[in-house]
Amino acid sequence: MGNSLSFSLTANEQHRQDMAKMLDMQLDPRGKADCIMIIVIAAVYFIDLLAAIYILYNRKYPPIKCKSPILMSCIIVSAILWFAGDLQANGHVPLANTQLDNCKAFGVWVRVILGVCTVSALVAMRAYGLFRVFGKNRPFRGWGLFLPYLVYCGCMLVYGIVMQVVASRLTIHYIEPIDICFYTPGFKASLFAIIWITWLIVAALNWHIRNIKSSFNEARESLIACTAVFAVLIFTTVMHYTSPQFALNRKLRILTTSFDHLATNIFWWSIMAVPITNCIFRKQRYLDLWVAKLRNDGLQRMYDVSSPGNTAKESSVYQRNSFAPDYFLLRSKVEQSPLDSGYPYFDPIFDQYKFDSSVNAVSFTDQPEQKPIKKKKRVDMW
Image (tube, rainbow, N blue to C red; front, side, top):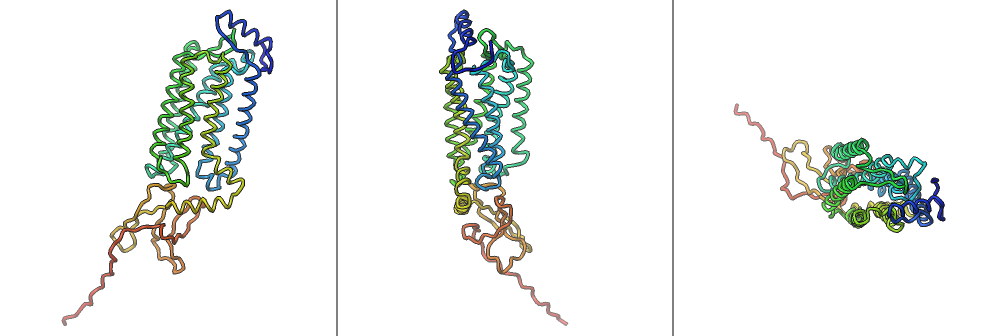
């Protein structure tokens, strides 16, 4: 058998069909439909890769910056690795006499660990980061954010090593007569368990951040993404267990691979489409509208600070649905200049301190004005 994929039926594919008949199996040869699918999805990922490069180049543009461009770019890279693994695992390309016949290298490490699990982990980390910001009022950084992700990656590394050590007949192995990799039921069950648990966690976190202000559309984006992913996940799970030999069926293998990467792209573009298109076509105008909307949605924060010489703490109103914990609105501890009528706050989007004199920027609870205590004159009796 050769290792080339053609738009027409080759002698090698005819040989696979004959071997499948001898094994009492129905096999659709690889050919035109597989080639078209590969070209279309590869073209889509080429556009995705260009978009990822673009958001990295414009990562300081505020509407893109708030979408975590580095993390979103990593998702695209992992999705491409997932697609490369799918080409082998779902039987779209010839494996014989190539490196692709190493089922564990591509089926476990490229497709499962670096592809499916990494995409799921990055999505979960993003959802957890948003939950920290909007639900727990904590920063989108630090060990508190990355530790769960590192633990997850450590577990996946252990999982991959165990699958590598365990005999191939118990995990995934190459069937030479029909030139395909076969997943055992136990290995398949463990994979689906990991993916389902990860996405259920993502769904739970997205439920907790459902009331995010409209400026960032995170609740709507998360709803679209989770709906698409769970629809595909249900389809894939049912299909894997009702038709375990789906890779031999042309329609089923193309549907499976196409739906996997359709869901990935729906998730990615539902988040990045608006900031990317606006950055390209109306960069400054959209930025002005975007920042104004942040201000109108009350996305600045204020914390209690004790002013010098006053032991009582001033109380303040804290906005729960704000953009990020770095949005602080603090009373100045120093005397303000007569020219400054507002309050200073640090704006991480522009990486500078600003003054905001708007009425809605701060809200104090009513407190009686404290009059300074006058010192009584000392009267000498003598």
